[in-house]
Length: 180
Image 1 (cartoon, rainbow, N blue to C red):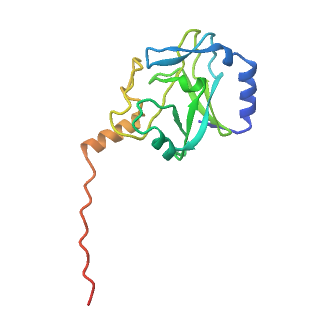
Image 2: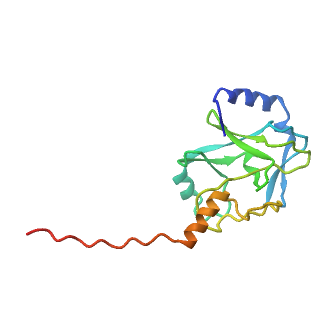
C-alpha cells in the first residue's frame, strides 16, 4: 500500500506526540529470538513505528549478508533497494496472521496497526518474501493459518510449479558454419 508523500510529516508528528517511542519494548519472542512488544493498547490504523536504517542496493545487501542466517533487510517495492534495518522497527517478527502492516510514505517505511492491538502483544507483520530458494525462509509464527514459510502464498505456488515442472535446460546451439 502506498500513500502520498505529504502524509509522512503528519505521521511522524502523530508518532512523536503519541505513545510509540516509549511504549514499545524488545524482549524474548516465541516466534523468533527477540521481538517488539507494546506496553499500551494500540487502535487499528495507528502508525506504530518507522522502519529505519540505511538504504543500500539489494545487490549490496546480498553481498553483505551472504551466508548469514539473520538479517534485518527490508525489501522495497522496486526490488533494487533494501533498508538495512536498525531501531525498533527491525525487531518486528513475521507472522502469517499479523497485527501490523507496512506502508511506504514519502520514501519512508511505516508500520501501522492492522487491527486493535492489546498491551503485551508482540507486534508482527507479514514479510511477504517473494524471491529466494525454497525452504530458506521457514515460518515459526504458530498462527492458526500459518503458511509454514515467510514467502507469500503466490511465491509458494510459483516455487511448487517450478519444482513440479522445472524449466527445460537450454540446449547448446550448434554454431553455423561460415560460408567460405
